Image 1 (cartoon, helix red, strand yellow):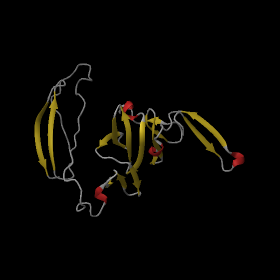
Image 2 (cartoon, one colour):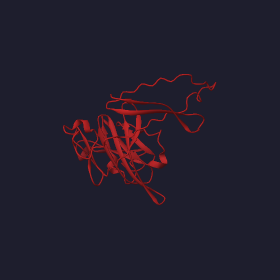
Image 3 (cartoon, one colour):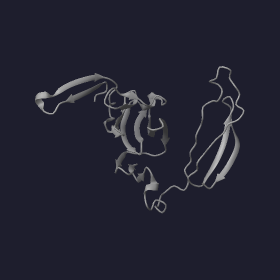
Image 4 (cartoon, helix red, strand yellow):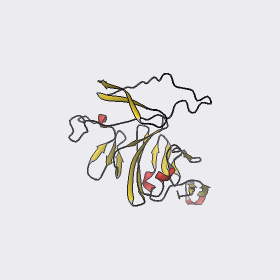
Length: 212
């Protein structure tokens, strides 16, 4: 790989080697460690975003992300676990450094961002470990036998999901009369539901404490 070219070298011995080149979005500068094979597909960070390559032509899978925040990286590290592609990016925007841990669910086509640094990653096949410079983290703690008693495990984890505007994409600008939400809480959780009208302030509608 180069930044704008993919070279393929085919053959079994030097006498029948054949080199072909394809102009495409290759691996970005400083992102060589972002390459990761997941379910027979190679994922990597290109100058234009995250790409997936199955052996033919690379396709972009990060169209929903801001490409400018994925460019000019200082380092990029990739890892994989259970159909999820983990990508940690370190970059400099102006005078402030930026780090992001992005997780791509390849089965559902969904991106999410996690609040953790991952300067290094190492996978065992059944678990993915991330090193933040001071401590070692497991991507899926439930796989560890003593994960509930391990010191340093967070007691609470804050998470929020914000939907897009409802009704504005319809030709008639229809009003929303009812919204049905379904949630599966694996552990005891506190849930708060809020709504925002016309880019105004958030208004809390309901709050629940669920055991599971």
